[in-house]
Figure 1 (spheres, rainbow, N blue to C red):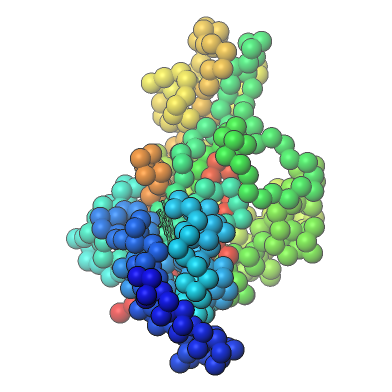
Figure 2 (tube, helix red, strand yellow):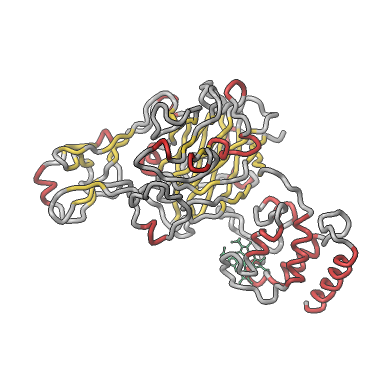
Length: 465
Ligand code: HEC
């Protein structure tokens, strides 16, 4: 192995002497050189990916070049920022620690090859054509054959509170429905959405989603310790451009960022809190009247038990008008099917038929019962009662089926989604032209009301024939 590495280093010397532009064709490392580096320095821990169908596709040393390009572990725009270079140098956290045998010659081999890979401005997700008989069941388990046929697209997410730094999507369609499955890492499922908590003096209070941030503070990543004290639910949002009359200009190039506006940043993307004056807080809205982006907003506590996500959208809005709390966020026609467990004399009003206290942190609407004074008095300090009463969404708000399932062993969420290809609702993206590329972005909310991690690069859904 040492001989091979020396030979490679010598080869690099020639290359460096003869050519100052690493990205020009004809001079860079071959993929077999890259594989040799992986074999020598990485195979001890990453030698194969056998049997990992339901996991985020890991880095493995016998990956072919196409899989490596699609993996998200390389960054042709800025090769030094590639995860395959950052991790072994411990410039990013790495389970294997610093790989001493991975020297600058090895990094050069990777860098040169990576610099020559396509600099796409987006990730591509290919929908697998399936027949209705093999359609996946929307149960949060990606165990159907359709999912082993559909090729995964891994894309990086960041900038928010999620544990995950990437997520994986697969897509399939059978003509009537489109199916998606998304998987991402999260150490635990967060379900304590602002429950009622009994205080030491016997009174009741609802737990806050998070400590109140001061005005003008900009949110960013937070520590696990800080996050674990928060009382919110895990969520996911997929934002789609709609095409035709309502299309959002710039979305296909820049993704969700075109809908993100922070007054403290000249209305460009930003993350400023301003709870005392919502007009000064960062908001989501489109940039011209009529522009609509479709939002598929999965909410673990409020909707998962009904096998639905919340079909919403983002529309045009102007600062200092209308409801500054929501900005341009709005919901499709119909009802969300959830409501707070309101206070009666400062105490929660309802309990569930099955149990008084949480978990679960929701009460099914058709099983709610009035709490008696006796029941409330009998509970110990710290007891929690759900603060959400749910019946599932209705009308056009219920167009999207979804079910998430968190596996504590792998620390992985799996979210399965199904929607009619065509709904006819002008607030929805319509998959009615399979020659079109449908652009969307993804956000992961990890125990977070708004502090989501997101994909900065748009993802293009295509329907290969
Ligand atoms: C001593 C064992 C060990 C060696 C050697 C090692 N790694 Fe890793 N690597 C890990 C572990 C454990 C993880 C999972 C935790 C994490 O994401 O850091 C990991 C994760 C990764 C990931 C993220 C994707 C994934 O599979 O989770 C990349 C990319 C990666 N390593 C690259 C490399 C490269 C490139 C080399 C060789 C130059 C290398 N590693 C050598 C142990 C190792």
